Image 1 (spheres, one colour):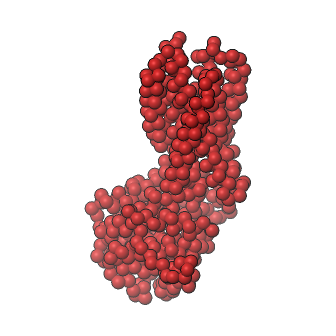
Image 2: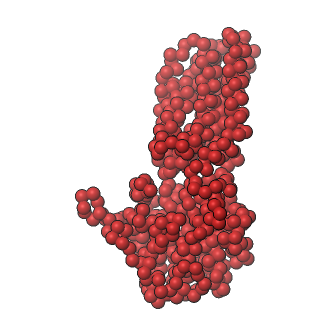
Image 3: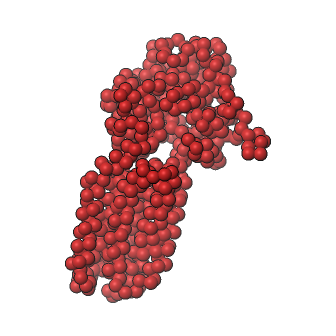
Length: 513
């Protein structure tokens, strides 16, 4: 019996370590999705979780008696608090004032980290009580802990998050913590007074967790609905992001990780400016490259040109492509463009694609989400735009969506400065898109750009040849002259992989909007 008990202690240490690392990265993912700036949120949550573990480990030395009951109730608390963490986070975000959700996330991270830190010292002491030497018990428990950490990280990335989502992942992992506690309770039942009473407490917690596992996701969707203006008609969590489609009467909107991608009422204003000036500048339309734009709407605009031979669309997330090809609302907007025989869709990272591709393109359209985290920031660097330039034919043209020059003035002009630093000629354009506000684009080419000589030769709903020059005029509060608080003019520097300055600038620019 003691052999079986000692073996399970090692197994328990590995299992609770798996649960601990899953909660740790889950809290980072929650912060990234709800609060933005993934690097900042993962850094804070991991730091707080480890700090909590340190505090918990320190407090564990006060647990000298009733080791098993202490461990069981720690697991009960981890199961209950961690299990309901994601569900509560979405509820607090939907119904509380700004900043409360961040305080809750950081607090819950510290608490679960603290409880996790108490677990291992208790297990080591119990293994030593059973008769295993201290050195041996410590080594084995720590081995199980570290190995469990690797398994937990892999499970979260490749199974739990894409298959269960963030709400059900928390409930599921909470159930695992609870199961460990109940198995310990059963194995050591002869040593534990009132074991049946403790089992009843565990069953009550288990009932709550199972209720959450089966119904929490749908209830959390009602919370998430509060974050969106219109009713949600489609929601999924892919391997890379949260995808939401809303619809109110005839207005269909696509959101990725909470960020609006388009509104069907005015998307044509955005996509016409993204596509047609670059198509007018390029001398040929044989090969077109679109980075991002998995909704297929930019492809629809490009297909208006009969001389287009090949369109390559590179979008990281296959779930967005699948949605664009099957959702009736998106199909109506993109006219089934991604199914055209001239279109090749590649689900790859845009940076890696440009590094590995040997092709040259007449037009490159960069339709990527704003640079609000580290992974997106690299797609707004001098290195990335240099790669894009190296794939642009001598008579070609490139257009880059570059966020709002009104809401994020310094971000917009930093992107422009970064593209210009690659040696390309640039022209700055902006347009009013009611669902977005005033939105900016950077137009680039190896040759001089003379907008007055361009001709928009395909049918459009908004853009005309005559208005192109007017789109280069910026107001005083959105032009390239950025002043500091003391009134001096700020020098803008290119954004690079080594100096990713754009993330902080972006976060500061949008904090009031």
